[in-house]
Image 1: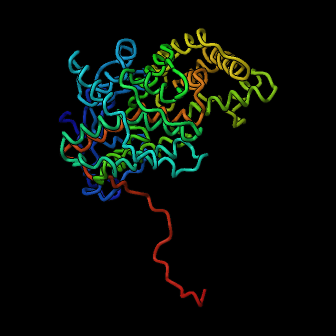
Image 2: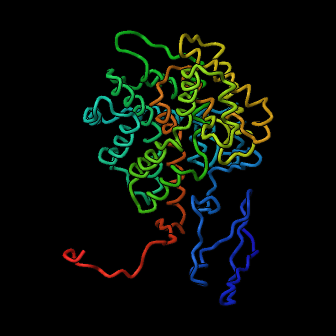
Length: 434
């Protein structure tokens, strides 16, 4: 923070108001406009909140211009290379890296809370067989408040931590069971001897009739994906969790609201859109170059999905990290038929984006969604599960942001203003005279 101010002058009345200029540890300075309405009677207008800081946070920092992403001050590159998803979870919710003993205790705590209440199995059966796994996840997570209401005093820090542990532990089980139910397969219970990602893969793919051993490379790739998606500042779903939580809603309801926001194709569905684009290209019978030319044509609505980013105006730092394991996975995994053709098209598109001057000049590099979509395709994960896994990864970010908001003595219930553009002062006409 600083003692600097910005002076706003109302040209109509000549009245002046000095607004505090806040200085973050890194990033653009921010004008505190909280007194603007009181002093001048004005609101600000910022569709999509692209220039508005809705909160102060010490969790995640990103610089889109420089391609920087940090969790609690630690560069994502270091965490991806040296950490694990559960260690990142500990870092986010505890604001520090754990000691060896602390990490062992945390992993034990998470591993031993992966089971769901047995009655929840019957809850799944209430959905149609063809229900989308995201629809199931929204409903089941929202219902957790009816099953785990013993530690839901949101103003108690200990209760908030217990809730965080429960959500991190149970989300892979909910995700895997959502898939199993939609596929008509029997539910597989968690196995405590497995790692977090191995356990998820086991619950997704194993069958009671035969032994399943998770592929170590798949588990490693999935762990990296979870790390890279653990949090991403005040995006649409995180802002939704904060807004829902600002009314003192229980944490399960707030996270369910975040899952619903993530479900939107403009947010969590980007990697699914990548695969659909690859399918469109292959099924068209046209050359890849013809689609590249369409993407360059400003009069053509076609866009290459998975390239560029709304926030990052440089290379998405997460994409650089996931690209390495994506290529490793493609070299080591066997693929056949349609899957192989899609992967070949994806790699050809990557080559174009990294070498074509049109894309390089506009910073339209492959983003994290491009590579995660390819990895999921290579792993045999169906498209309707892509966003479910995104939600599983982002749960720790959502619950950490929620807890941070509640620990802030200055937090208030969210109540955005509006620029009203409708009619006023109309006279009611009785229905007989209309």
